[in-house]
View 1 (cartoon, rainbow, N blue to C red):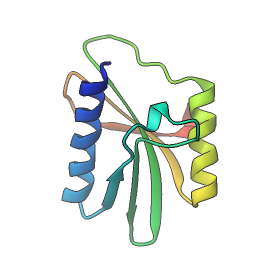
View 2 (view 1 turned 135 degrees about the horizontal axis):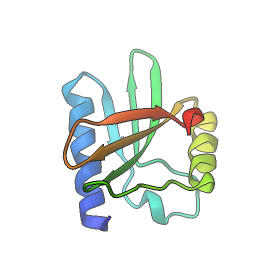
View 3 (view 1 turned 90 degrees about the vertical axis):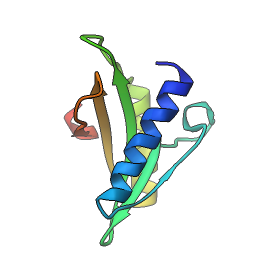
View 4 (view 1 turned 120 degrees about the vertical axis):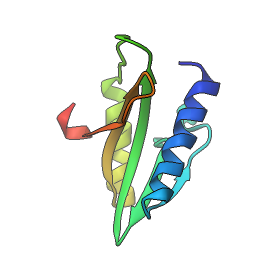
Length: 102
């Protein structure tokens, strides 16, 4: 996925969180920092989640490395958030998985 498409997808999910009453920020450059950092950080009613976003077309597979999962979980633990991965294919509905499900 291109950086432009990835950023657009992350912003789309950010707007979806706000629409459903969550506070949400996008962490620009999250994939290029030397520190563990999710794509989005969202919170509502005292619950915080850190989200890594993945998207693609057709039957294209999306991979997330063990290292990425480890970094997401490390950040989440330090921040006091739950670690989630948001996945969307072909512009269909978002699906969410806890990092422990991967």
